[in-house]
Image: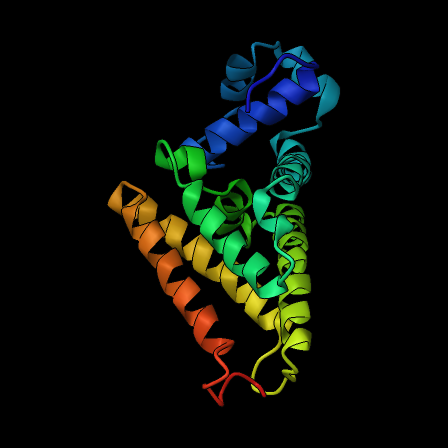
Length: 206
């Protein structure tokens, strides 16, 4: 995601790369400046601390990835369920490159910082939840189109579950050193969603 831009943008992009590769705690201000090609003075001109940068990076992550997902082809499906399944297929399709290249910045940061850095935890939660809300809208529309009521499960709960599976899949990819296990996890998630919406399944909420 590196690009020509302001020192602030370069530092945020450096955070994307370094924190996903080596974690928040192991990434220093010096590391970020070296990766961005800027001075420490430039860093502290834009950010009060590494924590301040992390909060800004979470929002920047939402902005960049939000535009990326908004442009994806799965939105072209008329059937909202096909959009949900298309979204999951797209998540599988972008499991490319090294693990650090396809894993989630905010998921990585919150695993480390949830107890010690409340502002970072809140920023990561906002990023994940905002993304889940877009999936939730399609799930709710798919339920409405099929006359399904929110009984045993809700559109919001399922949307958040998709994110739980994805974040867990990223953890397994880190542990195993590759994308195969993450892809398999997404395949299981796709099967699960299909089962929930299968009209022959009376547990689907009809």
